[in-house]
Length: 116
Image (cartoon, rainbow, N blue to C red; front, top):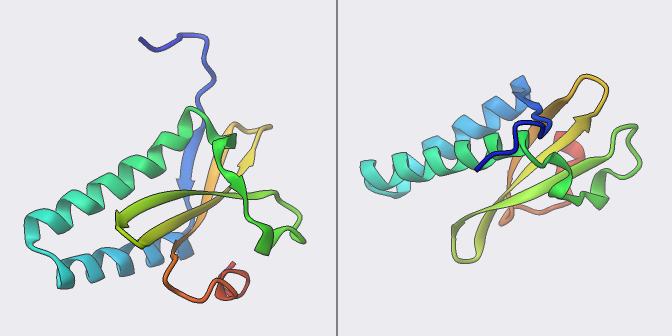
C-alpha cells in the first residue's frame, strides 16, 4: 500500500532522451516480434516512470560527475548482457526528475559525456 505522505516527483523526459528512447524502440521492433518489442518498450517506460517514487536510488554516473547536476542512472535489463542506462538528474526544489538519456550499455560508455 502506498504511503499518502510519500513525496512523488514528476518525471520529465528531455527531447534528446525522447529521441534516444524512440531509437531504442525502433531497434526493438527490428529485432523482436511485435508483441515482445511492445512489451519491452512498455517495461522501459514503466521503469522510467518508477523514478517518481524513489529518484535517488540510482547510482551516480561517474562519466558526468564534472557537470553541475548530479547525474544518476538505473538499469533496464533488456536481455542478458544488454542493458539500457536510464540517465537522469533530480531537482529537489521543483520535485522533478529529468531523464536526459537512454543509453544502451553495449555502446562505448565514453559516448555518454558526448551525448549529454
